[in-house]
Length: 358
Image (cartoon, rainbow, N blue to C red; front, side, top):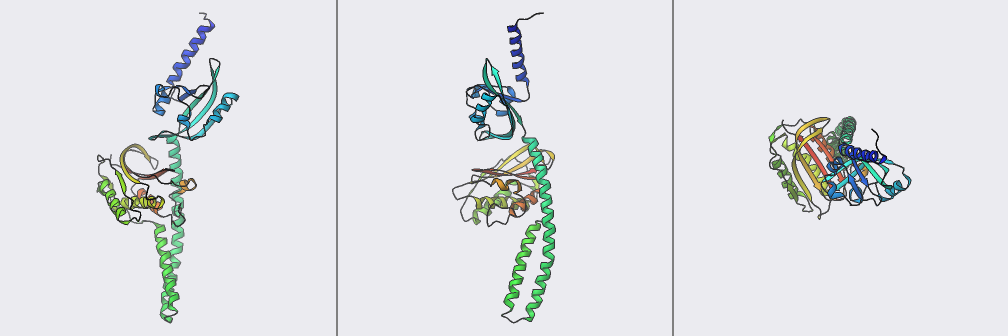
């Protein structure tokens, strides 16, 4: 059966539109003014916005603060040279943030150049790879620190004992020197003990996680000099959690104290709890978990230390020891949970995930 050129063209366009609507890959098209003129259902699902809401809006609505800017898109329209960028973090709204790999290419519709953008969400793959890498690095750093700490602690004990014996043979004036040796040896021993971290296994019992957080709130309200009050946003439907309440309290308190030292009195800290479903914790899929978020609106954590934040002796403050978060990580790991952090200026969120009984 013969068809006219126009019929074939119409058939081709109908197939293209139908297939684009069936694609799992999110597709978005910009016109020559870089305004949104089409997105397929996969893109609507990814952006949580319909085409009716986005049609005619500028591309900046989606790509603000990313490397996909007007200059690059204009260059694509003029040269036709496609490009691909990975690790594009898109914050389309305050509550919707995802990481994507984006391929941009030039296409023609009605002889007018357009930009075709293909999205591939990579949050889950990236998160799993990052978690495995960080877990391996954290274990290696912890083992190295523990080995080094034991090597330091043994001669320190001998040094302190020798100073005590020598102290008995010296005059009162000379005993000041041995007292200084003993004092500094004790200080270093205390530091080494903190480096070794908690060595007692958790005493697991069922606890209301909010009663644990209220104890943290009580301690903070009496102890911080800036009189910062914690905001609480609790989900009362969370069931009891199997945990050692003192260890979880210490982990949360370490994170809150770090936040207090990083923010000013005009900033806020929020303790938030929610039920999290289908989470990956240390490489294993967990159906349900209790999620504790410690959120502040301070300056954020420097990018240079975000990947090593939970390592011992890593701190963003000049006078910090870098042990608080490392200890918190160890305490959460003892509960087969996960501690993670997302930070940018104006929003830092530490998330503790504790598996719930299935």
